[in-house]
Length: 488
Image 1: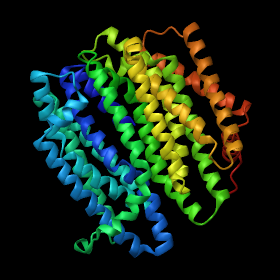
Image 2: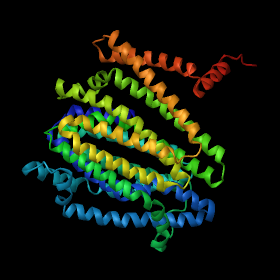
Image 3: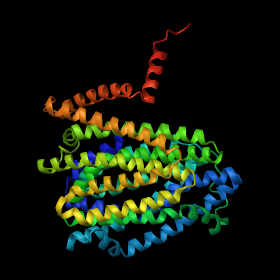
Image 4: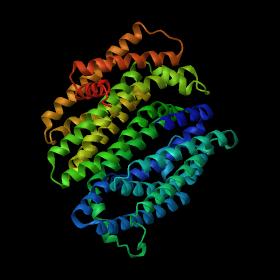
């Protein structure tokens, strides 16, 4: 999270809300849209299916099929990359209909520049999934951390020299370094993935594709929603795409970390529990991650509601962004922090359904959520402007969460847990916001963050014990352990 925030701050410092950064984001988003629409479902479900195969048919059979998936996805990705390089205008017309002339030509060139990253990213995703299935959790994350540091260094060194192209150079170097580190770890763990690569069969990859098939429609709908949002934003004026990106990045970074935890740790753990028919253990594993995620989001939501301007001033105030734009980013940041709660609930419940072979339900309501979001954006963007995007994200995913609850086992217990933690979130946010508006009048953003952070910790710890949450019992046990005299 720290590396991502620093990268964001450097982007604001060097590129602000310029047309160059708008174009970079639009080009990068083209690749993200394709990646998620084509391979997103497969990448999300690969861990669970691999574990099911290994438990039922043995390691050799699971690895043989994993090799086929690796080759199958890479061949198709190479064809798509070639298509993007030769005809980038087909995709650019959808993602940015508002660009013309030199700006459009710049976008076409940036799509060609960033297109090969599609292949490198997909290779990395499959390797990370396989390592996670073997309980190798830390090495992929440490590798990502190292590549993130390299990314930062490259931006600092190259941005003053080659401008916006520094983002592309740093991104490629980070991806390549990540792949190298992942391959080294696969070999170090003696996972027999790269042998017999010429003996792969398309039929071996099909079970993974069929397992992911229900998710292709919601992922495709999600990318349509993404395209609609970017298309609308590109018609609102220069810098709007960057403003939305800066505002959303705070919650996106947190959701990215939580998503990594869910796919890296939770899905494999739940899949093993389900395969072993350990339903009690399944719910306990899920509940711990569910409650922990909601507590973390309570902190982020409270801070971004009470003092978003302090975060924005620290990270973006050193660049060329004017005061009015910083204020707009602050308001959007608050709205996106609330939408992150709904997205997290939807994602973690969906992961539990994937791990219990009920992915079709998750996929169905995913389609509904994306279609609702598209409809809200198209209906209200003229009246609400940029604020419709976080509001539609919140409304659509919260609706999907309500619908999906009826299909969950132990839904009554989970509903009570959800209501309790959401009440805690609302209460601590309301108290922090009220105290901040009435009493905290600090001109320094750093002091404002320090004061609000200290107050939040006090309020959160107090309410954890008032609500008698599991975390309060854990804290009490920790205190008793630390306070107990050590026997020599």
